[in-house]
Image (tube, rainbow over all chains, first blue to last red; front, side):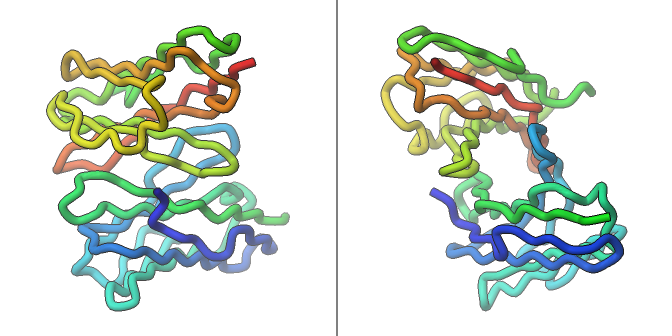
Amino acid sequence: SQQGEEDPQALSIQEGENATMNCSYKTSINNLQWYRQNSGRGLVHLILIRSNEREKHSGRLRVTLDTSKKSSSLLITASRAADTASYFCATDERGAQKLVFGQGTRLTINP
Amino acid sequence: DAGVIQSPRHEVTEMGQEVTLRCKPISGHNSLFWYRQTMMRGLELLIYFNNNVPIDDSGMPEDRFSAKMPNASFSTLKIQPSEPRDSAVYFCASSSPRSGYTFGSGTRLTVV
């Protein structure tokens, strides 16, 4: 079963703009991770945020986590055409030792 | 390290045939996961192993699906008999407590 719910399902913006994707989940987690998947390719790990962290940065990526609302957001600043991909959040459920993925957000960056 | 290696990359088979997907995890990783991805259902966890032992196979859709991990460096996912609705991309991933998850490139299965 899918735990994470991404919002929006699809997002189309102009190059240079910022892109924000949201994720909600239902259970207690050890950490939350974001992955990128280019069309027809495998998943690439982007960033991990632990349950006791509220914000994390990696290059142009900024992730926030609100465990009280069971939600996370991924912000990509100064978007580039190469950022076009599907983005998935995945929760590492406490006590379960497994990663459960959401349905993903399909991001399109228009040049 | 070459990462998680899956084979074959593509598989086209006829309905009713047996299909075996293979995965070589990253050396030193003690957990291995099989996922299936379809447009309709997204990424579904089928089964995962910890130290070669199956921990949770609740995601395996039917008895036609089976998975084994005979040693720390190899796992198989078998579908017998295959059906058209099994068509999907199957991903293998491995992890360890000190590292994140690493996914293979996937096997695109088409059952006709």
